[in-house]
Length: 434
Image 1: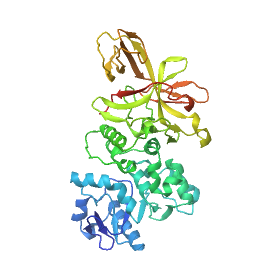
Image 2: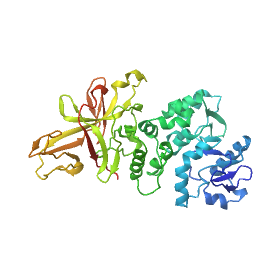
Image 3: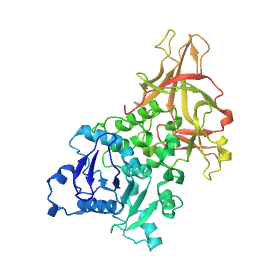
Image 4: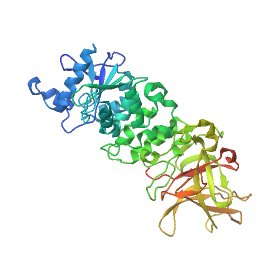
């Protein structure tokens, strides 16, 4: 780990468990940051500009707290080395978690601490709260202090702090997770994705890479893969957890197919989602056929063209009344159209094939070919073919009506009591973006 000596403003590298106590900086990148090479090449007398000011101020604050070392992402990573960049990004959450203190610089906040109302208004609009990388920096840091454009202290992330309550309202992250980074893993996948749903990154791939630490996964950085990075992230999460809330999303992206979301933005606007072990089943897995799930198929009453795939997660009521959780189990809703299959015969199961329809629209096809009782749909000579397409609907719990969003994959909500009254089958879903 490469650190800056806070007195001599010089690099020193540490290996393994021999890393000393250090402070760390969280900030939004500007156009004139100090890179690793610039840090080495710049004479002391030429250390001017906003990039150098952040480094020098960070060192000053650390010295005031008797911390001899500082880490800042602009220059402590040699980004010319892909190996070093990959290692640092995968370790970033740990860097912030192990720092003695995190200094958060908000250059777009000019109000002084005494002007409480104006300070709160400016903090709420700070760009720092909209960036992807700063989410894990906020959550991982045990002690974080915030500074305005003049590097004056304006607040801290601490228990019972009014500033911390403001941060909770801005970010949508509950105080429990802000106070204790060790419990972040207890939040559902959907909940953590929701925290990131309104954040943005300069590079498309970084919206996935900036979340690695939040989910405790590691993967190589492949700049140029664009949205595939977020697909890879979700697959790594599925390898690590059985949390089915990862499927509880919706999107306005037309034509998107599969159970995995195109981006964290697909989790925006959802209620708090918690995991519940309602159905016992084998874990999901990614195979060469697609994403395999073993789910209990549930027909929607009086709507025989619709089935629900109930998930082991629930959406909490907006008012936080957990006593009503039983009414809000989440399920994937799929529209079904039955047709005869004139091309296949024999005893085999081909689940989740993606075929092209007459309108050139890709559709998810579910085939259950058997000489026994068919699963659903019509049969002829022991064969069953059922077309399944995602329908973009989210149930309005109060009215019981479905409202269309025009997207390709969505979840529905239905009473838990009616869940799982159907056959449990292995279903393969082909996934766009992989």
